[in-house]
Length: 141
Image (tube, rainbow, N blue to C red):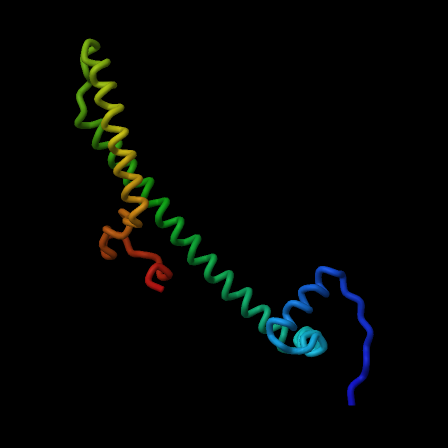
């Protein structure tokens, strides 16, 4: 035996229930019944907690990967700047203008190459062996 209940939904929610009923080819009552049963289910909270835990774990792995990548990028930049400053002699004043023009052209070439490499999906991080800089566990997933 079933008991009849009259409920009122906001129009937007009622529309979602109607659309789901049409898509799934089931009655609106079946949708509402399943939703209420799920809400009242004692294991519903456990399922929700497990879903949140999985999502938090995934976010933690993503943050670890970001920290690794940022640290690696910072170290690479620092090494390059240190090397460049140690091997590049200062230019005489009369050569400064020509060097700036040449520097702009080289920079434009660098930006074009960087753009092509970025668009291709290649990454410096992929070229670094794991024994030198271990990848985050989620990179292999």
